[in-house]
Amino acid sequence: MASETARLLEHHTNTGSSDVETADASTNTFGVKPYGPAITLAMTLNYVIGTGCFGLPYAFMEAGIVLTSTLLIVGVLGAIVTMNYTLESLARAEGVCAATRGGSPLHHLTYRKFDFATIGDMFAGKLGKITVQVVMGLYCIGALWSYASVFASSVASLFFSYVLGDSCDAYAHSPSAGCLDAYYVCMAVFSAIVISMVLLDISDQASIQKFLSVYRIAALVLMLVTMVIKIGVDGSDALGDRYNRIGAFNWGNFGKGFGPTLLALNCQYNMPDALQPLNPKSYARKVAFGALIISGSFYLLVGLLGALAFDSINPLASLMWSSYSGCGNGWDACESANPFGVFVQLVILIFPVVNVTSAYPMVGVTVGDNMLMSMPKAITAPLGPSVARSLCRLLASVPPLVLAVIFKKRDFIFAVAGLFGFLLGLSIPCWFQVIGSRYCKRVWGFCGAAITPFTEPIISSVGFAGTFLAITFVITGVAISTLNG
Image 1 (spheres, rainbow, N blue to C red):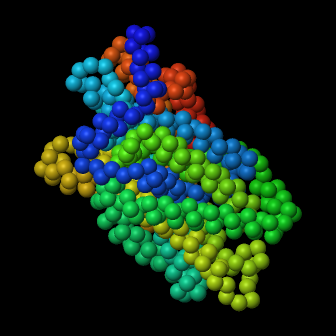
Image 2: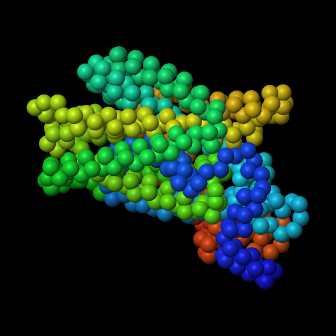
Image 3: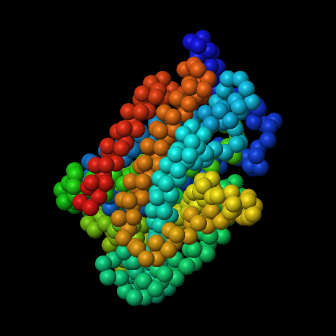
C-alpha cells in the first residue's frame, strides 16, 4: 500500500497532466469546442467579477475598514484553498468514473463535465446531490436576483441622466414614480435578453465573454484611478474624517461585511463549466488561481478606496459616478461640459450593465444543468434531453427576475446571497474533499487512491479539510446572527 501511494504521488508530481493532455487530444471532447488558457481566464474572470464588487464600498462602510479588509483577504486565501479542493474533486470524479472499467484510479481532468450535483451524488449518494442543489439553488436565486436589480437600476439611471437630464436612483428611500417605471421597463428588457442567452451553452458564448472580460478590467482600472485622484485632491483631512466616521471594526454589522466579500469571490461551482473546454488541462490551476488573485486585488482596492473617497456611499457603487464631472476632484462642478467626464460616466455606469448581462446567463446555465439531475425521468424522458435542459435553465433564471421586480433592497440581497455563496464556495468544496478522499480510500483500500495532480501536502488532507469545513459553519452562524445588525 505504501509503495502504491508513493508511486501515484511521484507520478502526479513528475508528470503533472502531460499524459492526460495527450490522451485528451486523441479522445472524444464530448461535444465541447475547446479553447485556450487566455479565453478560459477571461471566462473565469467573468464568473468571479460580478455584481459583488459594486457592493463592497458599502460593505466597508457598514462593517468597518479593517474588519472588511481582513474578511476580504482571508476570503481570497480561503477561496484559493477551496478552489484547489474543487480541482481535486473534478479530477477525482473523472478517475472514479473511468476506473469502473477496472484497475486503480488515475484522477485527472478531461473534457467530461462533472457539475457539483453530480460530484455530490457520486460520493454521497442522493443526500449529497440534494444538499448541493439546495445550497446552490438558494445562493443562485440571490445572485441572479442581484444581477437583475443591478441591470434595471443602472439602465434606468442612464436613461434619466442622458435622455431626460434628470436623476434616478431606484434604491433611494422614496424614488419618483417615473424612476420606478423606468426600473420596471428596464427589467422587462433585461428579462428578454437573458432568457434568450441562457438557452445557449457556455462554449457558444466564448468570443463575446472574452471581450466583456477586457471591458471589466478596463472599467475597474478607471474606477480606481478616479477614486485615487479624488482622495488626493480632497486631502488628508477629508480622508481622516471619513475613516473616523466609518471606524476600523463594526462587529454589529459583521454579516453585512462578511456576505458581500464572499459573494464577490464565489465562483467554485462554476468551474466545471469554465474549465471543461480548456486545452491543455495543465493550465487549470494557473487559470483558476490567477482569476481569484486578480479579482481579489481589484476588490480590495475598490472596497477600500470606495469607502474612503466618498462622504455618502450608494449600495450600488457604480451609481456614484452618475455625478462624475472630470473637474476638480472629479466630482466638482464644471464651468462647461467636459467630454472626459461624460466618457468616464458612461464607461462606469455601463459597467454593471455589461457585467450582469454576461454573468446572468452563465450562472443560469450552471444552475439549470445542476437542476436537471433532480428532474423526474417521467418528465424529462418525453421532452428529450435538449428540451428538458432548456426547461431547467428557465426554471433557474425566471424566478430571480420576479423577485427583482418586487424587492429592491440592495444591501440585504448582497448579504443573504453572500452567506449562501460562502456555503457554496467554501463549505461544499471542503465537504467534497472529505467525502471524495474517503470514498476512494474505501473503494481501493490504500491512501494513495485519492491522490490527484492537484494534491498538496497537509492542505489536501482529510483532517485539514474537515477542520476548515467546521470553521466555515461557525463563521456562517456568527454572520447570520449579525445580519440584522
